[in-house]
Image (cartoon, rainbow, N blue to C red; front, side, top):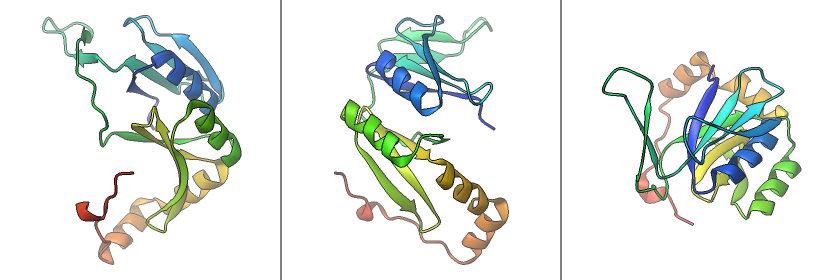
Length: 166
């Protein structure tokens, strides 16, 4: 089980506040690094999402100490990194949050197997949100046994030519 993750954002304070709503918690300043925030869940003990400025890189300390933050990174416009998060919010609440922020949001069915909501933080970072019903479906269908059966049946791969940007 993942207990916390960190994501980059152009506006870490705003993004942390939105994520806090999604995970049923609160947003706070995150002192290890300037301009950083953390969303802490009140519903799931130990769950947190750290939101760092997108010009920050984390690197190992050459002296063996705690991770070091280096500013000056050139932010990526997008990446393959994403998270799937179960939320207690319903579909309408998720779409309202996205609309309030001006962020892309859409409900989809992944591979015909389970439903989710693509929630595009700052219109560049994908967080897949699963309502309670979607989460139940996901947990029942994404198992080692079902994955092995899918692969045995020759699961198709998405070709880059099939991917649209829009």
